[in-house]
Length: 157
View 1 (tube, rainbow, N blue to C red):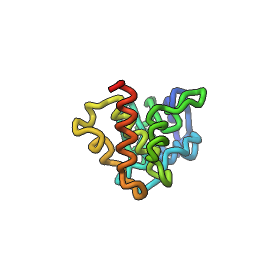
View 2: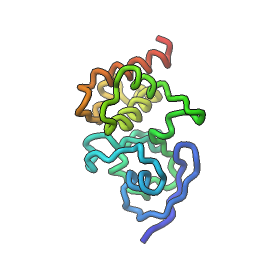
View 3: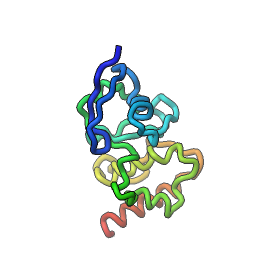
């Protein structure tokens, strides 16, 4: 049996009919056209499905849809401005070559932006902030450079 689940997705109010225990990842991808959030492992181990729910970084494959009711949710689609201008973190990933195949990139971006906005969430710095996100293509160096570049440009350091 489905039920109505309402939330704010990337700044706009959304209402979907979904089974309460459907993974939020599936709701976002299949019912909300937010296919930027990727399915990786389905077990919360890889970070490809990372999103921000009520200011917390979460693995959307582990969150039942019912927990999203009345939540504020941000996905990678919500990073760019309405005029198409990329978020500084997205631009840094492009400039530093931090994206390869694209499976981990949305989750990496969400984790990096969450860290940028909440540096206290990872007192150990960039590597700790991204520790829950796996990449098989880049070897992480370009990703770390991209995040550090965006942080420097954001704070003017």
